[in-house]
Length: 289
Image 1 (cartoon, helix red, strand yellow):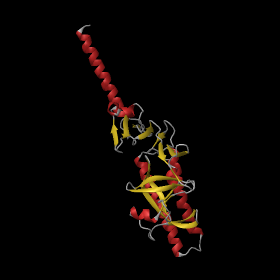
Image 2 (tube, rainbow, N blue to C red):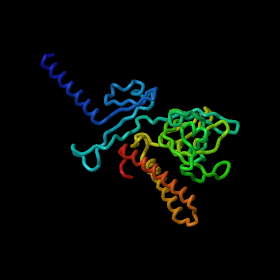
Image 3 (spheres, rainbow, N blue to C red):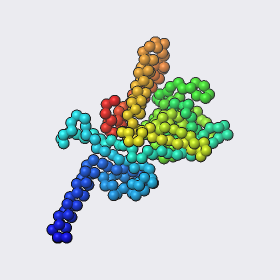
Image 4 (spheres, rainbow, N blue to C red):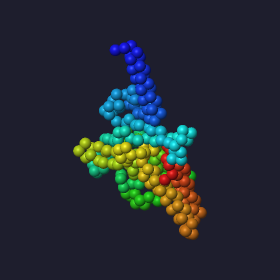
């Protein structure tokens, strides 16, 4: 074969490889979390560990740069990365059975306090004992907002708090609404829906496992790991709490000054959560919904 053809062929091959590489790096970033919990990013598929690349280990994500809807020109701004799930990662969390038929899970709160929580799908919020809260540096003071809650022991006034992070097995949720409950023998509190509603949940009684699956369907567009309906329901819930307590203050003329102050604290609590959620939505490039 002529030498000139070899030169032409090698040059063409190099050009094709470079073109392919530029297209990939401009459009796609890959992300995965290793066994030490460290998140890695790369625009080169070759740098992805083989186990993640082959699908033997779940957790590989594809981050795509998506143009803004306003303009498709080269000068238009790009939205922040939109994450699509490459593998629907589910988490299997060991369950500890009790004599009463309840289940206990091991949890880590705010990355530092390990605690045993009882699974309670009937509880709207995570509930932590005063002792666990003290370990977290949370003091049950009069400055905290309080709401009336229905518990197994009747109606009680529980203080509201926000947990930065709750981890159950490999599943983590940030910015979790919770309350300070009463001391419970042998456990640190209840694992309620403020955590569980972030997943599709199943219980495998045979293997004694809690299975937590992503809310998003395969290939569904997500922001911060959550599909659009999750964001909508979250904003709707916070708005309903804010407006509901504001109406209560307006229409209940018999409120004492102390009761009025309590309602105001609850409104401010949910307004703060709404602001934090808005900042997260902006960070992840969520369009107006």
